[in-house]
Image (cartoon, rainbow, N blue to C red; front, top):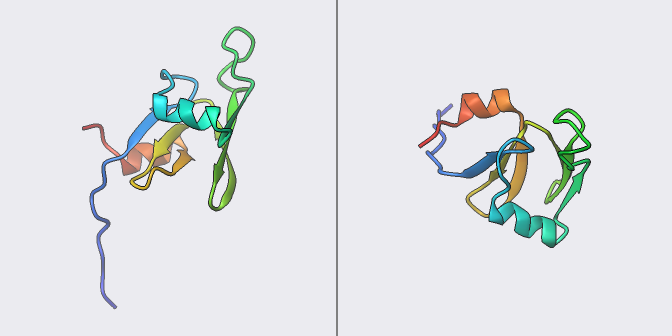
Length: 91
């Protein structure tokens, strides 16, 4: 059996409900590919906020504090902070 190593890939990401929303995410909200839920900072805590992200695999949920990733093909998906920290490093 052969072994393979994942190629290094540079992605865009931000921490949902922590970091400012980047334009590429705001564009997906505008096009209804992302639905924000309980995302009013004056009313809801990080534990209550979430978003619904439409993907090819179906709708995925990004919770407050999750990282939202834009992949190499422009796809958007959530990632739990512990997995993100093990997988990615800041450049």
